[in-house]
Image (cartoon, helix red, strand yellow):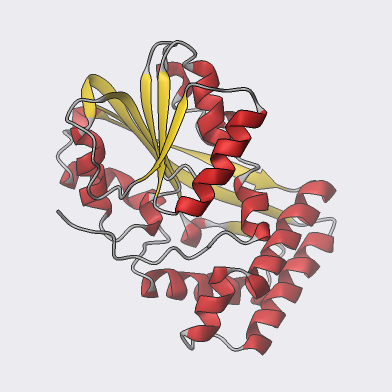
Length: 271
């Protein structure tokens, strides 16, 4: 089996978790929710801090969610979140999506949010997700597409941030423009076209609170997260360039006319 070769670009700095814990099933997996039944067994791949996971478990109240991530440390935060919400139908374990330990046909739903952009072999990951899904079940994946981010007003600093992010992500073995590639990866993984429902959705940040939050967290991530360490350590950027990018994010967030749209490709693949 293929093994993960990509290095996760974001890490788990507080500024990263601030973003990831904002995610809910409603704002990040709405396309999947109509397919869920109360008695479903769900596998949540790359669960991170577990906010989406807990929402899914609250829906499949008569079923069970198995949440996996390659980083053992983040699973403890996900477990704490579930415990704090009083949700008990979740199990957590470390796993590699390229080579899942589960038997064939083990789950009704396999879900992955913002995962395939970070793995070394997204096609193999989809093959594994398909393998462990029961006939009649669904594989649900959603990934953003960095090259399609749109912001206003124009900003040299944000353009430099995007160029840097894509270079670092690809240097790590990932694919930051995953959203547009999901359908092609699913076809290569063995899904027939008639099994695939390919759609898109967006996040938009424009209110004063949203601008302050998003601009502020990316200013911090540009200086203090694993992304910053990798960008500087690999020679893709100097500290001065990272500081300029952080200022650009803060400046964007302070403008009343600022607007940002983040697009996502998303798939429901029927097995």
